[in-house]
Image (cartoon, rainbow, N blue to C red; front, side, top):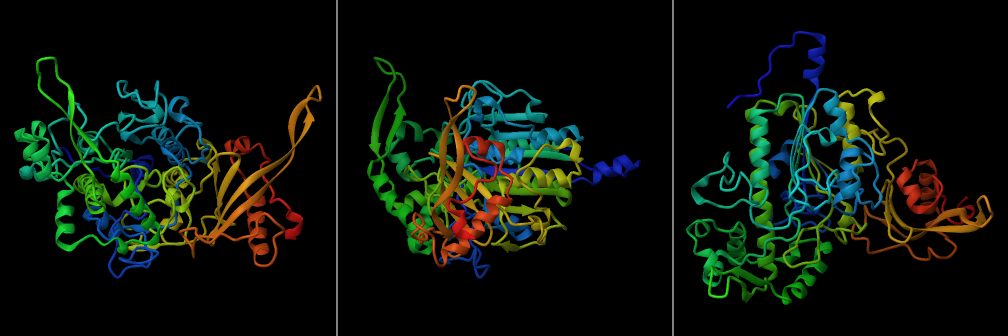
Length: 562
C-alpha cells in the first residue's frame, strides 16, 4: 500500500503547509468520564481504587492506556451539550449550544472542518453524524453529500439503531487490517467505520489532513447478549450457524475473570454505587430474546424464547466487552498513523460527546465520583474522558485534574495550530487551550466560565477553583412595545439555588444552604465571585435568547454582596 511519505519542500508556501499538524478527533457515544483504565500507583485522579478516581478498575483498553502514556489526560474536561446533537455542534463550531435541534437545521455557523478545507486540508468524517443537513437526524437511507461542512469524504449513519454489524459493502470483512482473524471475533458495531478510516489514511489522505472518527459505542442499546454458551443452548436457530458459533462475544473474557476473581463493586467511587443499585431494578424487568424462525406454514414470525436477566457482574462484562472491541479498532487507527509516518505531526484527541446513559440494563458507563449521567448538568453528565497526544509537543504521561477545558475549545485550538488567519475564523465561545495541552498555564485570562441552559429558565454554571452553581433566571416583566401592550422583560437576574465545590465534592452531595434567603457568612465571598465572573463574561447569543436576559445577568440581590 502507498505510504504517506513527503518530499522536501520546494518553496516557502509549501514549507508553511507541511509544517501544519494533522488532526484526528475520535469521539465515543455516551462514554463515562470514569470508563478509561485506572493507573496503579498513578495520579490520585486516575489511581486504581481511589474514592475520587476517574479510573476504571476493570476496563481492559490497552491501546487507550498506551495513548494516555504517550499523551496527557485531563479529568476536568467538559461538554457544553447535554445530548448528542448539541455536543457535536460545540465540538465543530466552538460555540456554546442551547438545546437546539440541529438534526434538521444544521450547524449555526461554519464548522472548523470547513475552514480547514478552505486552507488546504484534506478532510474526512467517518461514523455517527447527528449534525444536520439531512432530511432527519435518524434517516439512515440517505447519505450525507460529500462536501457538507467541508468534508471531502463522509461515511455516516444517523443513529445507532442496532447492535449487529451494519449491512454495507464492508459486511464480512471484520477488521481486515491489524486484527488476528483466527478467532473470528466480532469486534463491535464500529468496525466498518474504522475500516474506512484506516483505508482513507493509506490510500487517499495527504498531509495536512483533518479526520473525524465518531464511534457509536457504547450508545444504547448496549448488546444484551447472554454468554456464548447460553446463547448456543437457548437461541439455537441463530447460534448454530457455523459463522456465529465461531465468533464469541467480547464480554466473555470479562465474565471469565469475574467468575474466577469475583466482581467487587466497592472498587468504584461513590458516584457509581447508586447506579449499581438501580441495575438490579432494571434487570428485574428482563430481556425478551426474539429470534426469527425459518419459513413455516403460516409464515415466519418472531417468538419469545427466554427472558434474560443480567446480574451486575454480567452486565458489567457486557459493557466492558463493548469498550474493549472499540479499543481494538482505535489501536488499528493509531497503528495506521504510525505506518504512514504521520504520527509525529498528528494531534490525536480521544473523548466523548457527554456522560453515559443510565436508564437501561447493561448501561453501566462509569462516571467515577460524579453524580448523574446523560441529559443532566451534574458532573456525571458533563465531564468527559479526555486524552490528547501530540508527540514532541505534549509531555507524555501526565494527568491534569485542575485545568478547565471544554469541547468548545477544540475548534479554536486547532484553528490556531493550523495558523488560520483571524479574518477567516468566526466567533468562538471557546479559547485555544494549546498551552494547557503542553502543560503550561495562561490560556484563560480571568478564568473559565461554562454555562448550560436547562429547562424552565434554569442554568448550570461552572467556574474556576471548583465553583459550580445551579441558578434560576428571575425576570421582572412590564408592558411596552409600539402599542404599550407587549409583555417585555424590565429587569432580570440569576438566583442561585445550589452552590458546590466540585474539586472537593465531585459527587455534588453537599450544596450550600440558605440560598433562597439573605446570603450571609461563608456564602458571601462565593456568590460575589460568581457575580464577578458573570459580569466579566460575554454570553453567546443562544444563551441570551434562551433565557430572555441581558448579556451580563447579575446575581439577584447583588447589593448585599458588595
